[in-house]
Length: 206
Image (cartoon, rainbow, N blue to C red; front, top):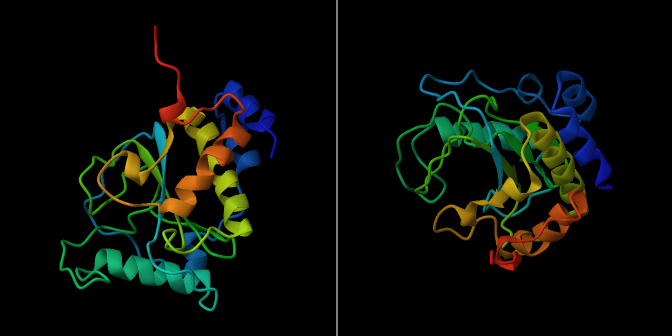
């Protein structure tokens, strides 16, 4: 994907027309069988985008709808996969879910802040998660294409500069989204904006 579309959409200011034109095909909540969210979600206005991994190994044998229902059940329940008992969340913690086959699932309403088991404020961040444990797995080509589509769409919608797209590890102590995603994300962002530089490579102010 060339850089022009993201620049053009940002110049347009993320108008409703631009949003609709740029929106990727979604597996919406009705299609995957979502339950209504519980009370307690916090309204917010996004100004950045954070990329995550599920930290569970990729499983192409399960369909995306089944995975999303399972993720929601874990979120609104109290018991996590590792056995920890935590306070339940109102809904999925993520706004968009990208399956191993590139399916983009609609998660929590993006107008409400996500949730996390780690120590950072989720207010103002669009939370995008990809299926896989990217300490071990590698993002599939289909996932990479889908991720680009989601990033372009949400960056235009909320007027988020490419420099404001980050990974979970940038905000708190965690390995998320895994070394194999962290290794390729700078190239993905540079494809969307050729002037992008990873934070560690930015020139210091004189």
